[in-house]
Amino acid sequence: MYWTPLAVIARAAEWLDDVDAKTVLDIGSGAGKFCVGSALASRARFVGLEHRASLVGAARKLARLFDVEERVMFVHAALDHDLVVEADALYLHNPFGENLFPASEQLDSNVELSDARYLRDVASVEHRLHNAAPGTHLLSYGGFGGAIPNSYQEVRVDSTLPSVLRMWQKRAQV
Image (cartoon, rainbow, N blue to C red):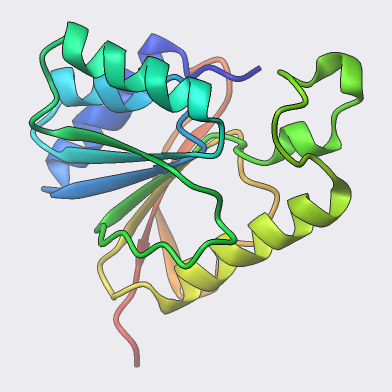
């Protein structure tokens, strides 16, 4: 429930290259599988944002192991920090769902997990999407719990994967 399947990574990397994405922000990057795998299969740079220090450490080791450190960076921070990462694409794979799981299904108790945290994080992503520059792409696998602003147009869908992968593009302001 926490990992992006390799088939999804391959399709996302293909789509990111098709739209010439330069920098992709993976919110809730965990141990870095999406960022590292996508860096191996595409031309884009990747920034993984993760609130668990142990997973950031593991992700950095994974990037070194696969020799993609030049194009992959992992940041240890939570969304409620004023972190600014310039990106022309975002990737979301249900990054906040763990907040709603029973304790027995949560990865650990090393970070705040609560309904309130879930609502704050979802609102933060909605705000970021609303304020993103026209042309910004959003890839979503399994959703993120919030609403995609009306300013985004769905441009691709792959329902042949274990769950649906979707890509949106923010339209220019009219």
